[in-house]
Image 1: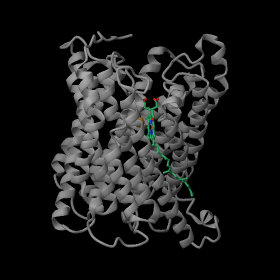
Image 2: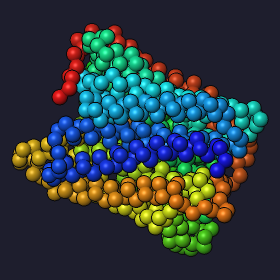
Image 3: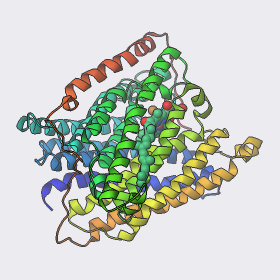
Image 4: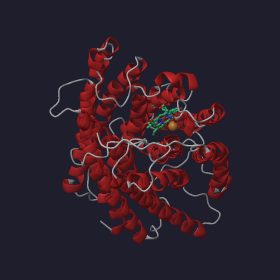
Length: 541
Ligand code: HAS
Ligand code: CU
């Protein structure tokens, strides 16, 4: 193995380890919510587990996988070495140290604040310091990605940047814009408060800064998955990308609209005027659009592939698609799940309907379809595709890689649909005692929580199959005589010109900042200047 592959592989290693630990916790949580008796079941263990699961899945698995994928794209789509390998390794080490610090704080039992770490719940200082280090490490990754793009641009002043790198650059920009807010929250408020340097924090201000970051975070997860859908899937399906330009428009719309929408997580919060919530709602409905375009473009690309493989008639092409390929099945099942998850998102974004589902099990149903399937299953499929290309070894236990996406999809359907239903029946999210000590309302949840637990068990089997294939391939995969290349889908029609306005990242970033200032400037100003009482915080259990 030549040297460059080590960097992404080191990132994937952390991602998969975090995933394995978090998946083991998840199965116990699903069973706990169904009131099944588990050894050592207690409130403390439940909240510790939900915190570890959320942080390791949503923040560690995703971020490390995305950073690894970013390096692969920068190296192979631009066909040049990644500049600043020293900075890349330092960033990796800092993010890993942060991960270990935060995970340690959670496992030690004094930081069960869930992955949203809302004050007045208070964690140990090392929980926040670790998170800050993960963010600093990810900024190092952003710097290396930007340097890669700049050095490529110097030698290709008029060319359109390859679409895969275009998508990764939008990921980088969205991440740089939104992490500023969480850095202010963690460094300016939560670390000093947890160290006792300041006595109080303002929960509404903290939540506002969190969701300034928290919604774009979901597109930081989604955009690399879209990179796989747009630039890897069509070729693996045996076809071409329906439109390269539509891909660029989609990615740019995410730069513009990912951030000024955060109040859709705070519809039920006091202290923010309804007019600002409406503004964020309108932006939220606008950001459905690039995903609709994606649905169209990717399905059209699949139809192109099916017809190039000889598919006839209205739907004959579907059967011709390569259903035995792990990457293909994983991504298409991700997309099907995302259709449901996106539909739920549109419901969440409407103020009135949000009032019904906010803080209920519906929300965990929603995000297990989106980040938990559209993103996570795409990353798993991408692992099966990347590993042989990065390690030079064929997939070990390949049959598991074929079955695993189906298991994930089946398990997630049982889990997510039942959670949507219990949510509508009024079951809160994030609670330990889902039986409500025999309350009549809770009795209506029981059949659905049992189904959700069954889904959790299937998901666990699927997750362990994934870990088995990854570990098996890295350690014992058969060495390949001919290593397949990392190649990206060609568009159906070659892009006509060179660099267009959709490649002007500086311009779109400036416009995004203008929108952010419009959406957040006054609300943040009024929160900062408002008379605050603060909260002393709740420490320990
Ligand atoms: Fe969300 C809550 C609104 C997308 C993640 N969301 C969450 C939370 C998470 C999350 C983690 O407005 C919980 C946060 C917490 O802990 O409190 N969400 C939306 C909207 C979208 C959306 C409007 N969410 C995502 C994505 C996520 C994610 C993506 C992660 C990756 N979400 C909300 C709202 C809340 C929320 C409120 C707050 C709820 C509350 O009250 O707490 C949109 O971006 C969705 C757009 C998607 C579509 C679907 C397009 C379909 C495609 C596939 C087509 C393919 C096919 C396959 C049909 C419009 C692209 C065909 C196959 C063949 C073989 C032919
Ligand atoms: Cu959101």
